[in-house]
Amino acid sequence: MNFLLILLVNVIRILKYALLLRVLLSWVQPDPSSKLNQVLSQITEPILGPLRSILPRTGMIDLSPLLAFFALDLAQFGIMRLFG
Image (cartoon, rainbow, N blue to C red; front, side, top):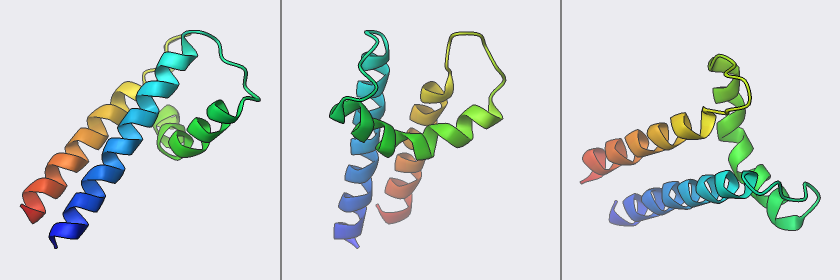
């Protein structure tokens, strides 16, 4: 059980770092064909895509990463309470 807890918490942590890096890179207009941008998109888009369809349009500001961080924090907290 302890191994599963550590694994799940670390996967969520990696997802949060990938989201943060994607947000930071979006501020500097990265090359969409770069390998890093493609990998980050493949990792984070399964989380951000459904959230974008739920959230209302806010112009140029994408709030889906903020909601994703909140959801991942809740999931991490729930997993730690469940196993710990």
